[in-house]
Picture 1 (cartoon, rainbow, N blue to C red):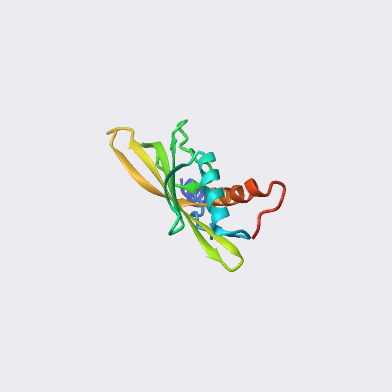
Picture 2: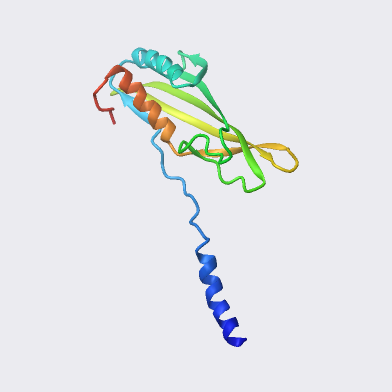
Length: 167
């Protein structure tokens, strides 16, 4: 009996250690780039390209250089991995399921000594439903910078096919 207790005392911590994972840590994201062109040319390209990237442009203030856009994604399976690696929403646990995810983007265009600076600020959120009570709640997600990087690259690629992105 004593031998079995000793074995359990040694094996249990080893078993539980295998279940632990390191917490996710936010790494710095690249959400800005300078384009070697005039503000007007970059502004026009952003409006054209953003609409083609499945984003809904909800506002465009050319005087202040701000484009507002949003992206809505419905849950397509039970995994909840709707936007892949664009954002981290945390685990909903076994009792919650994702219904949809939403991204609000503010694209800021401003003059820069080297051309025009474009900065993309994104807020992600996820709507979850409790499987028992059917109550819903919205949780904030953390951007990984992937969507922002893809958009910045697409703004350059549309004007300069085959050329490397600046910065």
